[in-house]
Image 1: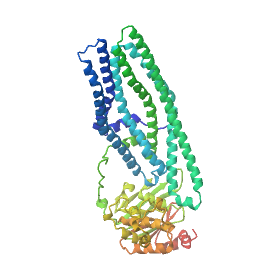
Image 2: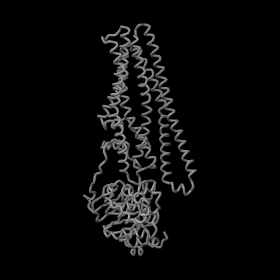
Image 3: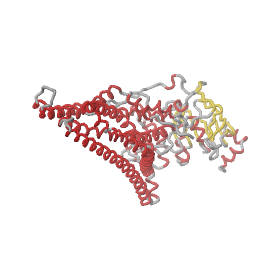
Image 4: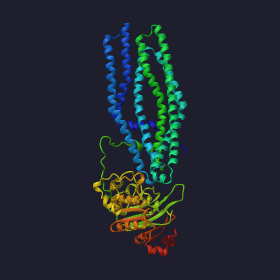
Length: 597
């Protein structure tokens, strides 16, 4: 399959237009900075011409000498001041914009399919690759500024001696051949370097998330050896990348220096022929020193462009997820302009999600289908209804598609066909619809953060709006929290490592209850809870008559209590009804009831 083209320059141009005023004045500051050497060289030329009595200007030599240093200092200070109040804020805001748009794109993907790599690897793309992309954007303006300086310099020099000026094209030609020769190697080394950095970041995340397992299995030394080995690979990859770029830069500088030497040799011959003045020589020497940097920067621009292309490639693959969305569409979303909150806090926008759909009375699912790519596993043509204030239990043998059904219903998988209605109104986008306060969901393996118990419940919500104690009590966790020294302010460590499996599950359940929702969805609480605790949890839930629940379970207590049981087999609905009815009709239900499957 042909690899899609990444339009680095077009992306950079759109990012430059994000804050045109800041970019324009930043561009002017660079022009001011780079034109300063030309201005000083012209003043020095006039000083020497005054000494030789060949000057065409009626200005005192002492005035020129007194102007030299103050002007240099003043222009450099002014250029730096403008740069730091324009271009530096632009770089920061552009980075925030790009990262924000990356997050928006990832959040728009089906939740269970969003990341194709680990969180650690993804973070490295948000950090290093975004920085590479935005600094390249700035370098475009810088190169234009240098080009303006070079243009003025060449005009001045060719008026003095066009033949000498023409010799300066030699280093440019050599630079172009060097870049074309090294292009493939630059891309290869940069990809290897970024991949190695991502592997280290990924390993750090995995180690911190598996501290308990590492200690239990006494694997500390093996983990350290592995960590050392991938760091060594990263070290070698970074050295190779930096060394290759350093070699290229050295060749560039040598080429430029040799070219300047040749030019100065020719200028020396012109001096003996009286076609050049000492002032002209001083001007050429002053300008050539700065032009050397210009030629080197042009040579460095293309390798930097290629490295930025690698970074954009990694960003595109991250935000694309498992969807086959075209790079052109992703490009538009990545540079979508919007507010960035650099000097003020973000104010959350409250909205009434139930304004158009109303409080849940009935959820209707018709012919819901999701089959995993490159597999015949999944769910097919699943239809059922959930009414307000009822308990609906989803059951079936392992691998029957229960979790897949929940994830497809919630939009965590992108349904391939079927229709879902809320109060007889069709739902177009499940992923954005099934969120609090419509639905709240606790997965089979809950996700907890390295923070306090309270913050794991709030997750950014205002504490005044959340009944934390009530949620903890409903999740049968209040007594255990009281035993902790810092109560709900206790830090639970990465992935809740300080909590038991049952405590993790109940903390995630408390987080769900804290978001008062129309429909609560549970994916097999029994996998982490003992029978007694689970019974008490459900007893407390059932005490709320208006609570609507959709739960995966095989517990007899739950099957007895259920208003409706959905029996799933091989991704299809086997039977729907109450327990007595299913035990009479379904052999599959009989085997589940007996604990045979």
